[in-house]
Length: 102
Image: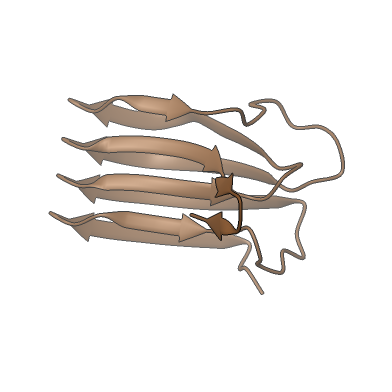
């Protein structure tokens, strides 16, 4: 079961949070980031949406790939806040090719 609020801290390391098979009992999940010099990847389930407008990006690009940025529909809404320094923030759905997923 995913908590209503998650805190993620990392220095010089990659972070990958995969929610595709998680049990999410809340309409809104808040993620507080403090990641320095590492990539952050959020893999969201189909039907989910995300808001990354409150993330402070310092020398870091952010990309939301095929995930709605406005809350709506029946899926959970992820609100990401905090700071990403010297890395990359990527939000996407699970990729699939034939039998493989990543």
